[in-house]
Figure 1 (cartoon, rainbow, N blue to C red):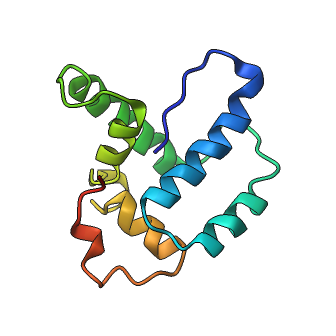
Figure 2 (figure 1 turned 45 degrees about the vertical axis):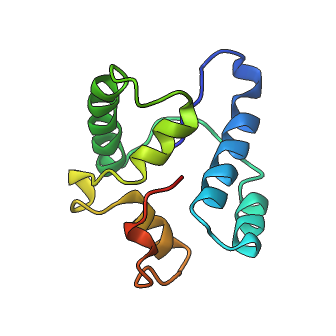
Length: 119
């Protein structure tokens, strides 16, 4: 999950692009795969999803986010994004987003890295 302000809507897709790449870097996805993803993300379109799983994850994340933002644990959006990499979503079988990212990029998550907190 990446978080962005809705202000400055003209730059939303560029900021989304940069935030996704930064998150992949923090997840320690190999640079070559990040570069390939950057290339694949050249045409970003914002719109509705037909996926109930995506909607379910977004609703679940919004509820948890509202609760977590009341704490003093987070100073930046990056802090929140990193925390949510370690949050198991019910709609995807209680898997961690970090695990899903490793699967999507065909990386081995058996190295134990999936259990490390992102710092």
